[in-house]
Length: 249
Image (tube, rainbow, N blue to C red; front, side):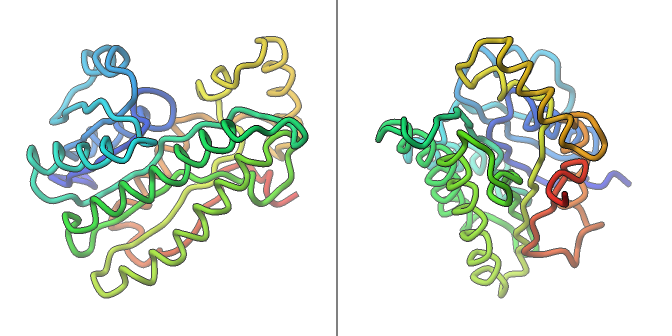
């Protein structure tokens, strides 16, 4: 028996990186998957490579109407929801003395407002005993230069998760998050930094990790499968660090 047989999963930020790796794994484990992303071209490209029962929905999580439409299209196709994986996020670095209102709004709209509004829209359609999963980050546990606003968004998401865990307890809906460390995903290439700077930053991160390397999107996907499955039936309200030990040193 596959671990997610006939379960319905929605994944935001699913056109690359952690989201795409998780979508592939969920499909392999029998889930019906709704893949969401901001770029239709990217969604079309990945759709041609996937096997299983899935649909793609173009949606920008920072836009309230897009979150509403995402849930509507998912439930119109598959009915109820079993797994809501709110994975979409951005992490452009900016030193504290250079933070602008636009930078602040862009990060909080995508990383905090988006998941909160998507959750609000989805809750009436999530089956009792279902699960909500967030991609968080270890950044709010450690101080990384230039990531002040990004860290603040992830700290806010962690606080929201705690409240949600309590509010949904009567329905048996589990709420957890994954806090990756440095993972080899396209997010680093989207920081707006020169490639050589990104590579040097990556080397610095890897040297700090006790395991001495970046993690992979596939390793995070395995954690997302575990937390969404019955294997984690008594795990609720946690933030699971998947970071090669970085948060512990």
